[in-house]
Image 1 (cartoon, rainbow over the protein chains, first blue to last red):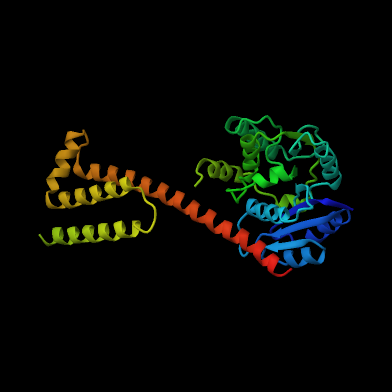
Image 2: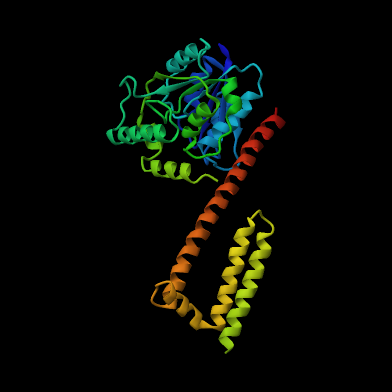
Length: 223
Length: 110
């Protein structure tokens, strides 16, 4: 049982799958924090029953907001050394998380980021692949970090990094903000190959590609 | 003419109202000055409508009505962007509160 790591799972209307995902994680990790982002279904109830430490937003404020809440909450527990952001729809694999944890425990990096593009084990729909590639170029131009996958939800980071997280974009543009935190604080980062399992469910829940337009817009006009 | 009186009263009332409302938030002084100038220009052009025409000709636009239209488009864009930024700020503030509340509630029920 791993007890120095918090698995942070933002969830919005994940009723059909949340219990299964949390139960699987719970088998190996003691601290599972589920942030119910104002779901209209029974997500919070199922998550609590499955054994997660569940927090609920009054209304839906976006995935970035749920991550912010989960990270701040996990930071209150002094036993937590590592923080993992994990998707609620079951598309991330626990073996990847454990591999990333082993990597960060070497102590050379502050954050380990999953990438779908180092090895081609992930089957990504062709159009989505092109949009993600564009996102990589966009990030390179705006933030200036060399990465192969800038919009991957699977990350493992240490306390030092978690302390600097203060997300302003509570929508989907938060992925770029994580990279800005790296840049601003000169954190050591590493990308490792992971596999994202796109199920029919996660495909139906995932953000439509057109949302890329909104992300770019959000990044350009920040309050 | 009665229409002039009505328009001037409307402009003055609107100006007073907005400047007073602006006082409750942090609006940079130049925004207020620009706004007062805008209102003054409105009043002047109501009293002397030909001024707009003359001004339009001076800067190379055919008619005064066209000048008004261009000015309105620019003002509209300015206002829209202003509102968008303000809206984003409010949204961020609200989200911070909701995030904080979730943690406070959780702690309370422990």
